[in-house]
Amino acid sequence: MHPEHPSFEKAVAAKIVAQEQLDKLTFLWRFKNNKVIFTNGCFDLLHDGHLELLLKAKDLGGKLIVGLNSDASVKRLKGEKRPIKNQQSRALQLAALQAVDAVVIFEEDTPFELIQLIKPEILVKGGDYSEATLVGADIVKANGGEVVVIPLVEGFSTTSLIQQMS
Image 1 (cartoon, rainbow, N blue to C red):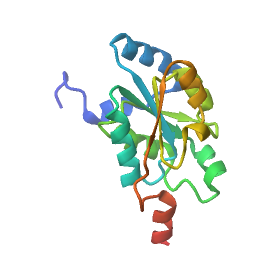
Image 2 (image 1 turned 60 degrees about the vertical axis):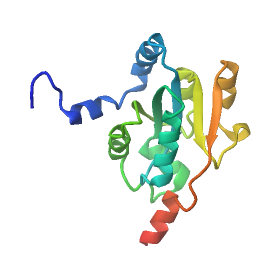
Image 3 (image 1 turned 120 degrees about the vertical axis):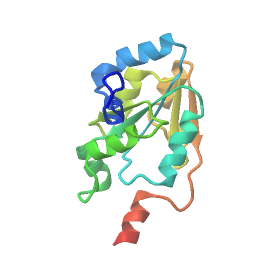
């Protein structure tokens, strides 16, 4: 490894940020005329549906932040047997994707507080939601932002993958 070329592993790890870093990060992106795009989820077993959502979110043009449910949050939402992968593993997988600019882990059941903090210009979620049921849509709209619901890719869900493996 050349000293002037940081390793790809370090660059990926640097994309996993603490909530306290978000103000500075989003300020710099906006200063460079980038929109901030936000989506969130458990991303327990990364599958084609997740990838499609992330790629389409990134295609909206801007810097993509992924809010990742913590292990405790996933357990509360999905049950005692979840998550399959721990939050560091899930965060690293997301951060390794070129489409993802930052990953932030949150402890709450919903990303409401995170959305209040980030104030994204674009809020993106999968088609199992509507704008009316999407947490934080009201915040984004009140700030002049856009809410985008991406249609689900049929046949892909973490729950169905787990059932297939059983």
